[in-house]
Image (tube, rainbow, N blue to C red; front, side, top):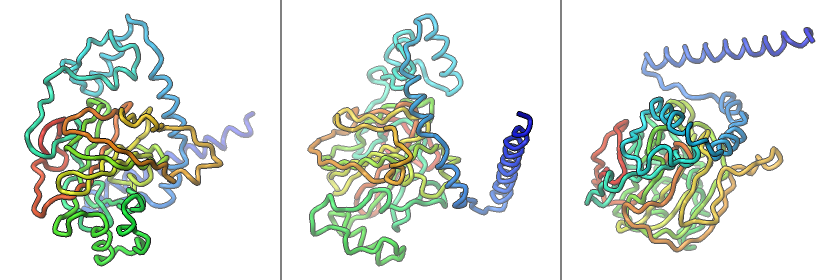
Amino acid sequence: WNSWIPIPTGVGLTLLGVLQWRRLERKRKRNLGIIDVAEDWEIKCYTRLPLRAMSRALGHMSRISLPTALRSPVYGTYARLFSVNTTEMARPMDDYACFAEFFVRALKEGVRPLDNEILVSPADGKLLNAGIVESTQLEQVKGVTYSIKKFLGGLDWKNSDSSDRDINFNQLSKPYWDEYKKSLLHNKENELYQCVIYLGPGDYHRFHSPVDWKVNFRRHFNGELLSVNPSIASWLPGLFTLNERVVYFGTWEHGFFSFTAVGATNVGSIRIYDDKELKTNKKLSWINRSKVNKPDETHLDLSWSKGQLIGEFRLGSTIVMLLEGPKGLKFNVGCDQRVRVGKAI
């Protein structure tokens, strides 16, 4: 027995040493104003962690019924740890049979009034990014990007005349971006905008439609379940293209509109109330991991109105909106500011 103990101990100490060195190196670079992102070997190691299995296990655990006497103490502890505003809950703590119910708790009627602006926040959370999209590389957070093509997938769901079959997405130059944007937008005089909202563990976990719009297509990527915490998003390029996500495509009064719910570590599932066929956080074997980011697709015929309750996360995650709008469209909320359902953004 003693012969094998030093091996894992040595490996563990070496790993801790490497992680500590990386932490100090990142801190040093931040102090110098240098953006430090994950290297390929770090990304590979991170994606090999059993985060999907862990998330599935926690999802199952969250559905275990708790004795009534334990509910208030357990949920109350969680609320204190993650700053949950319990005064807004529609029901008392004792009414939630399990953690899963508590996570997706409804709010009291009237606590999230709907602004009259055409675009409102779909969720409670922190605004990570908002503004015009100027290339095929979108910002996750300041200075760290992801590919719009990988994030949305191909444009074959549109009419044949707007297919992306002749566009070379390996190029990052402006002509290729102009061609992609042209194939996406309905009005060539408009621009494409992005809005990214991070939902933390203590936030209200249901989400609502940010505008009045028609939904005609859904694409589900069975990706990874990596953390989407802002500290990870600022370190791991392409995070949103790696993770499991559900993309809804459609149109609003200014043209193209997409709404994406991005999965994350410990998110038991993403549920969309009008999409009964959607199944997320499914078990993936090592055999089919190579197909982890190949999407399931379906055509839809849905109409969602501004403020309408449309879905929920089982814990916290991220919502990404990509929308066509007139030139000069301004967001009135800055990055890292808090947003609330129904408030104009």
